[in-house]
Length: 114
Length: 111
Image (cartoon, rainbow over the protein chains, first blue to last red):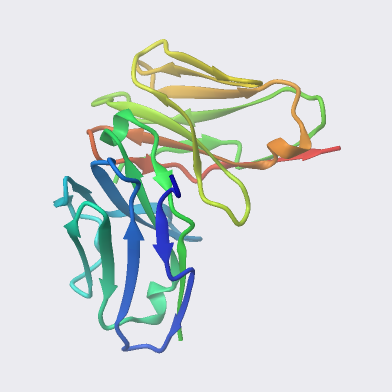
């Protein structure tokens, strides 16, 4: 298996632009998670899906952030409009059985908003 | 937001030394405790998932213990090697889906 695949690896965008991050989980994993990593807050959960359904989005910072999982093999995290404080590394992870199972993380997307 | 505390924040040891780190988490509503290893410029990799009080897990020279009643877990590395240098993350889960990560212990092993 190729693991969890995220794209792009790096994204530099101007403030106010829309940004879309993409994730392909491991086939057969029922859980998908979006995390954000910053120096200030460490790794924090933004949202997670179970069987393509959003279960907990309480970590999504504000309405500018949205996430979708249209099918079992693809998810997007969108920021519109982007702001400099959104600059961070965004990780996608998947798991076979939620917290019963270790998470497999993607390589992350380093987002810089200028 | 639940508090997951890890100590020490960083640790420098000589090759061959044995070392251990601590993770503290809320002792109520326990579901699972994870340990991850995170090397620079890579992604976190799962080491252990523990779900029962008294659990002990081992992978090579690395082992972990769990005490859910008092809310702590220890990670041990026996005979540290330079390739063990990484940040070790602990994560606590009070439910099936959410994992709350600590800030990690950064280990450097000098040859």
